[in-house]
Image (cartoon, rainbow, N blue to C red; front, side, top):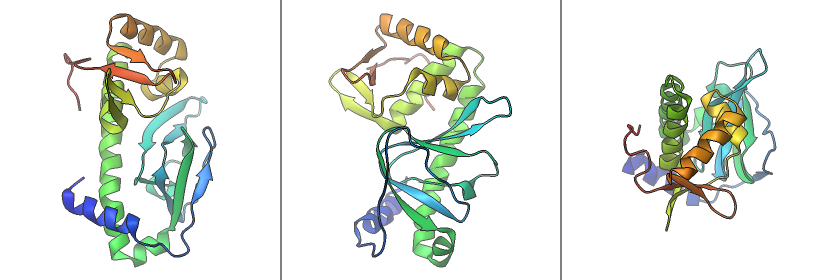
Length: 209
């Protein structure tokens, strides 16, 4: 995000928003989506995905604090948003965004960021080896939601093995096996809450998007 757009966003977030209430969803809740408006994440992380005709779930990325998401941003009929942890959201109608140049200026850089994230996930999906896909995904998540800790970089949300499997198009059993391998190689570890910690210089042999 540019310094200018970041300043706009910060000033908007700290201004009183009369009539703007927070919506709370617990971890695992499906967030209702309406085509006439968008959500903005105030706290937490939201997984965005679609369901294929065969019933398989495909990740479309995630929305983190300050990011907007909603049905109106997608052409997909099946579009789901799941709280990956307890989240706080605010709602903006599409008419409200269209009528406010300042609000539209805030939304735009967040949409660009989501597009960049989706492109990175598409590039990851193009990797032929499942292990490469997982390593690239962990690097992307390190950049997007990583938190520095003594041991390296901790992913800010605890991801289930099924979450990771859906993100890279494989099975939960395969992800479990690969994570065990990476842990045995000293590239990752887990904290007491089972958050993944990437050790410093892990996967330094592959390109980081």
